[in-house]
Image (cartoon, rainbow, N blue to C red; front, side):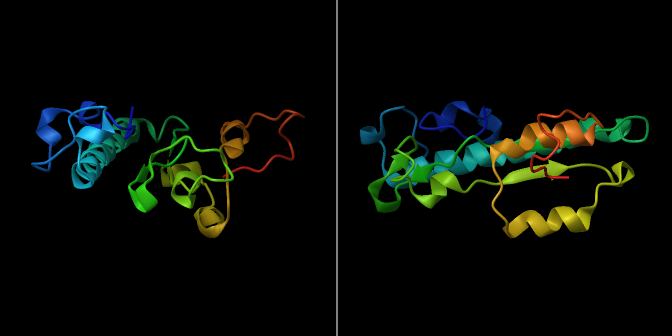
Length: 153
């Protein structure tokens, strides 16, 4: 489930607990700000491990198959900035931290993805609308519905 609050403490195995103080409840009023941040940081640490494991799982197949990993969150989280926690405000009131989220794309060199083209997108706004056209394009599937849609590749 990635880093999804306030139950961050449920998002990682105990072996990944990095901080002494972690919010151990879904009730924000029972936790100080730092313990909420610590829980989120630990859940992100576990997500990093999980993604690394997924890449290691895909690597043995990179010569015989077209493999790619795309990881993107559905939204960001506020962790106390301006006393705002979690997410879900109306879009026009939502802080940028909830709107601007990372996307992680891994693919082996054998897929011949134009890394220079992809890296130019780092500073350009993209959206979840890129996912379906990107995957269809990656696997060589063309449809009229997405032929002019933006894509990661």
